[in-house]
Amino acid sequence: MLPSMKTFTRLGLPVALALGLSACATNTFKADVSRFAVPLPAPAGQTFAVVAEDPKLAGGLEFATYANAVAAELTGLGYTKAASPESADMLVRFDYRVDNGRERVRTDPGVGGFGAFGPWGRWGGWGGGYGAWGFGFNDPFLGGPDVRSYTIYTSGVDVKIDRRADGQRLFEGKAEAVSRSNRLPRLVPNLVDALFTDFPGNSGETVRITIRDDEKTVRPTD
Image (cartoon, rainbow, N blue to C red; front, top):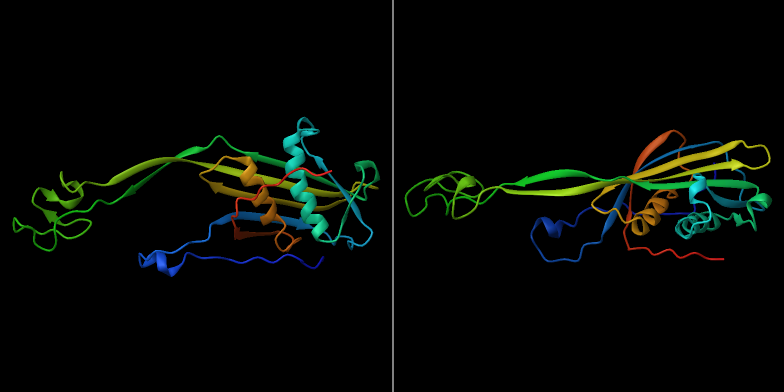
């Protein structure tokens, strides 16, 4: 199995946030990554070309931008980008997507009452309890539950690596994430980053990868 040349940090929410303290939190991006692989050839002397799995994407500037992110990962592992797919040792078939989204509703309890006993002698307390007009969740002055609706999107990338000479499949991998963004220029570089973390991984295993979300911008290169 090819040794990993990529490291990552699993990040959690700072304790300071739980305490209500002011702090600068690092943005994170989480993706579920599944990979299947046979022993890959050693990088030395091996060339690759990234091609579109969907022929409709071939030649597009958007595809070229995201394919460059895949190429950067492979060159970082020691492979060499070929001048053309016809001269490459390996063909890297790449695809990306984001769905149309679905609605999610979140309800946060309101604040009820003025304390253990309010000015009217009724039981209050935070987040519920019996107040002057009933349970604190429905208090007409202090507010009831906070109901919010928002859209979440599922995005993903797929990478398949074939040996060009005989078409043998060497690697299959996909990364998927659920987020409130549907902006592919932000999502795809993060998904590619997650997919190539600890590449090629353990065949047949699905893992949750957490990476730094640094608003990556990937530009096409020659």
